Structure formats: C-alpha cells, structure tokens
Length: 131
Image 1 (cartoon, rainbow, N blue to C red):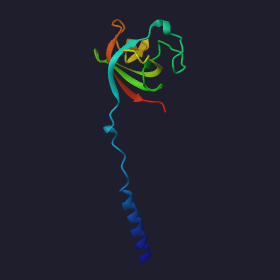
Image 2: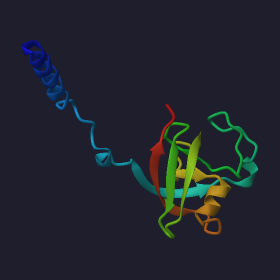
Image 3: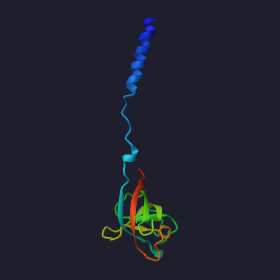
Image 4: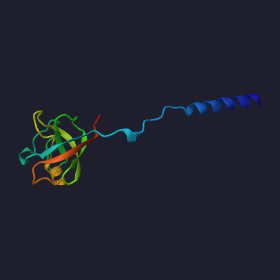
C-alpha cells in the first residue's frame, strides 16, 4: 500500500511539473509587415516575357514586382483610394531606382480598380513567404 501511494505521489509530481511548460507566444501580438507606396501595372507588351523568378509573366495571373521582397512572397495590396484589395505573389523585381513600390499584373490592377488612373496609392502587407 505504501509503495502504491509513493508511486501515485511521484506521478502527480510529474503532472504538476508539466503545467510549468513554456507557453507559446500569443500570435495576436505579431503584427504583419506593411508599407505605403504607389502601385502601377505592367504594360501589355510584357505578357509572355520571363520574370526574375523564371516564371513567364501572364497579365491574367495575380502577380507583382517589388524591389526587395523575397520572390514567392504573398502580399495583400489595398487601394487606399477605394479600399479594394487583392492578394498577389511577388515573382519579379522592380529596378532599385523605381519610384513605384509595386508593379502589378493587369488583372490585379483591375481588381484594385485603378486601370483608368494608371497609378494609385496602396498599402502592401506581407502575408507569407515561401521558405
């Protein structure tokens, strides 16, 4: 009987220690990386050309060029003039000296409703990056 109680005591001690495990960080405290800038869109003549990622550019897809974001990164682009949004994959590079923050495929620009304006002010939020 004493041995059974001793074993029970030891096992309960182990459970008590397990409750002191390191807790995972609260995900809500992680803020997404965002930037404000000017968006443009690709001219039709670039359709079919190779991008920096090696993919063939297609104006019908939801893709974009950015100066520094890792190729394969997904971003949410929000048009600050009309609050429309689109999610695009970064698959190309803008020149370092470009005054634009992002260059979108025509389909993405249509979804953001700025084809007739040509340029618009946007918020770019990083969603995910391929490892």
